[in-house]
Length: 241
Image (cartoon, rainbow, N blue to C red; front, side, top):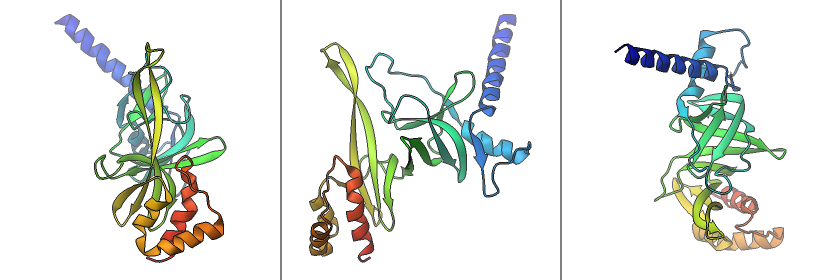
């Protein structure tokens, strides 16, 4: 019984250490009035929103490559949780499991609570990449986090994914393979698009206008360059409701 009591005490002490490390996380909360540098009970409550997750462990250490978007290194960014934006964060986006990770003290990595995260940004290669949580599922739509390319009356975004290809290297080693899908959300519905004809099928009443716009603007649209769809979607979105 004494041994059991000691184990419970150690477990409780370990939990307190983890909580303390999380409170000293690299992220800071900012609101309309900016970050408050003096201790404040509201600051503590806000900051704890970040820590409503679980400790992350790598399940793919034997797979060649990594499961992250952009880089396996932590990238500067921000996270919005329950309407509160936290800046100065260090983030990694696991696109194999569609999970957002942040770094805490003592080499602890936290998998953020996806139910509470509404959006996040990552600053990579001198550009800010904006992601939002898409309320959908894999049957009617992409679901999960998507990179926002355009947002107006309709929305255009990319859904990234990595899958494990078994024995992909020399028939010996598993490896990650990255893919992406481009989605358009219009009037509450999701459409997967990869070519101009997909756009004209959605905006069928604007087919001739779209054709003229592409010709006059000399647009070159390719699914390999998702951003190339932005001018076309913006035109369709603004040329009539």
